Image (cartoon, rainbow over all chains, first blue to last red; front, side):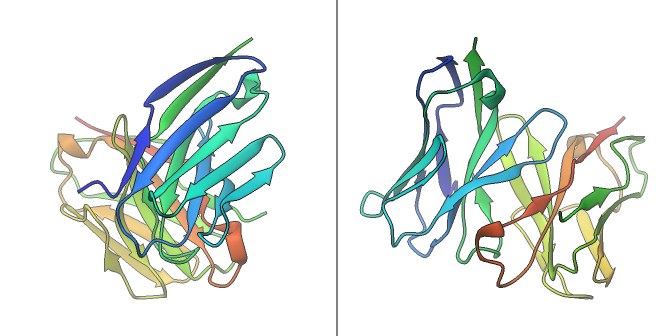
Amino acid sequence: QQQVKQSPQSLIVQKGGISIINCAYENTAFDYFPWYQQFPGKGPALLIAIRPDVSEKKEGRFTISFNKSAKQFSLHIRDSQPGDSATYFCAASTGSNYKLTFGKGTLLTVNP
Amino acid sequence: DVKVTQSSRYLVKRTGEKVFLECVQDMDHENMFWYRQDPGLGLRLIYFSYDVKMKEKGDIPEGYSVSREKKERFSLILESASTNQTSMYLCASSSWGTGDYGYTFGSGTRLTVV
């Protein structure tokens, strides 16, 4: 049973465009939803995270939108840059440092 | 910065060998995790530990065991390596009560079993 479903599997965006990655979850006990960014040859690194008491969180060009009733959350990257090219993982857990369940990842390519 | 160090970047082992993957973190984190990463499957949790000498199974523990004798070190053991255990293995650590800092991952060990 896949508890966190992520789409699309891959995404190509032009420089300056908006990248949108979506995730849906099944377990209503989840209360922490982070996004991780992974560059080739590196481990994933925490990018931004949200809790279900807010519907949106922004950090620079990165925004998480959260829809509790639909059990969905998404990552928006505004003004996408070639340096944003990486694999992005959504995840969910009960508590910020409890075990994370990850989506399958999205390979983002931003063309110059 | 928290640093999570995995002892090997690349390993090649033979089928049936006992394999040890080592992970060390330097920030006194209570929690440590082992994931494997495969294309199209994302990150899947193998084992995790919340304290010294304790361990809990993740989603795919079959064929693996772990050891945590010291707080900073968490070892993943493949009792008898098989080709389907060829993968990227990622270690991570975290601490209770540090807000949204979440996990810190190591750079991974790419294991090939031949």
